[in-house]
Image (cartoon, rainbow over the protein chains, first blue to last red):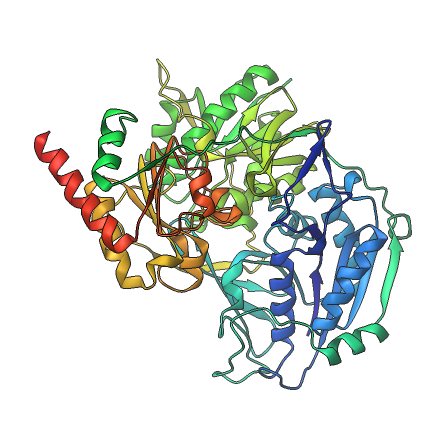
Length: 273
Length: 322
């Protein structure tokens, strides 16, 4: 099974954002792989494994759209175990979900994977669109915000669960398909390729971290740089951010000394109970 | 300029209340686009729900077919795109529910339209405001495609109210339905007598400090006493104390109730993104240095074991005094 998985670099979400003149200043940002993309990579790796630490079968190709420097984060994903990388060099500021999805669609045409696995959203843009747009452009089925996935032994379909507002939805899709994953996907038994892993296969309840061996191996793995022009694209963002500002901050209120005081204030002052 | 197609989810015989805030956003968009709002419902046996929607908008198109029972992006997105084209619309709007998030970007792809997720304000034909970076930034954005697609943040717009005169319902041409081999096998519904998280006036949430799932029982008692909904932090969900659909935060649900009570929640950025729009925030935490206190209107440094039973007793007293 061949899987294309995405990797976007994002500024560390714990770092305080700097806003200057209506723009986000990322010059001092510490970059890391988008958390949901790490889950996507973990999902893809598990789908090519006979079990935790077991033999692998298939290929995991990492795709990214972003600046040259994003190769550093992609190298980290290769150290987790992915096989090779494709980086379409572009200026982050000139991209939106549509442009990224169009670029990924070109990579899918070239690579012809059985599955594309993406994080459900990036933790900077928070748009939650790329996977769905990609599926629409390709005319492929989609299964979004996945909590679990089992790929059938014949490799022709996948049965997934996802959390929806009403509860949990079980959805089956024919392959090839586009999948986006949520945090539950890294559960011990959330991912399985029936054609490879036994029914009781279990993984760690986290995404894997790069081992020293993995880091050494990743140095020899290929990251191919491409341009939009080579893919026959001239990406133009349909959505542009014209200005950014910090939301009105909430001020810390008062400390109350007791539950009695709290209830009195909620009743008499805030009038919410 | 053209019409605005509003995708309205349904719940049995009525519109789903989570959709109504997006109708308010759609009406604001229609004022800029210079056309009417055209409501669209999709499903199997949605005749009554379509009539219910006609109480709010002048024209409703109902795509009613047994093969449309479950919302599938594969079948719903082409119908929404078709509705936009048929109505000569220049915008498509819905709420950012789990269905809206799944279906709308696919419809945008089919329309070649730029999409803005989670809008909190309509500023013009193609200009909107939306939060990003876990709510730490508000972005003003502009869409350059002839058609714009938006999903509205449910808590940012008031629910729409019925119009003076009811509108008309027409049947949409369903045509060929190709689910591309996708199917919903089952939906395991979470049964709850409580209001939906997104709509509750009071939300009581527990965090990692609750230690175990059974300790949420006492929070449920407080929740029910206040007529609210139960929530949880990502840490509590990750630890398996409560199901993930209770998660409030950047990657869970965004809530903005009148009263939000955070119990044993430290206040990670991730969590704050989902609740800092609440009118009044109460934090109860044994750690006086917890970041949650920096945004709380009322902070009480106490263990949940001591504070929650006392809070239940006090609220009961207050109710008895009536």
